[in-house]
Length: 204
Image (cartoon, rainbow, N blue to C red; front, side, top):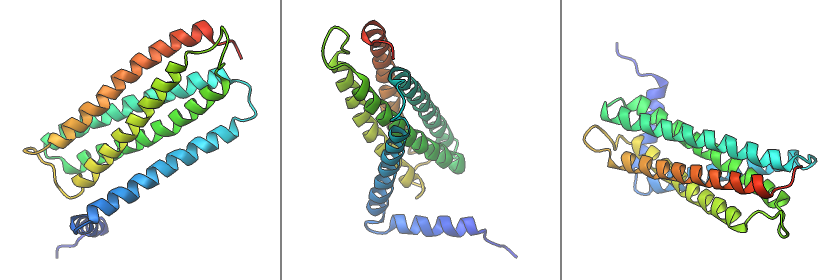
């Protein structure tokens, strides 16, 4: 006698909800709001815990280094997702997208913390001042990463409805390109920021 696993029941219920009129929009809004809220709370908690430390400069570089790793992990997950969907391996495909969502959420958490620490410890004037354009560009990159995260969330939710397969995966490919492009921009920004910070930021 054929039995159906509980995970299959949950997946079927979730797929039916997403396929309802407005179901995908509701899920997208709820998940996106939840992830951004979690990222904000983690960032605020990290700022609170580090409020008593005087190691502002190392904390900035550490946070940007960790966020770089998370960005690279997200890129790797999206590459794997693109490969899996072409091979019609739906479970690994969805799992890779889910991990990319986690990486993006982690990136925003750490990046928000790093921007806060940078703003607190960056001289605003004088010969040791970091160019304010550096902060602006990094902040703009973080805003674009919010868009990238929302893009991945949308693709992930669509993947739960079996929208993508070996014949139709353009959304997955374009999502990956967008993420990778932001990764390249971030590497350039990190290089420029490191040069500027090494030349102007005073030691802690």
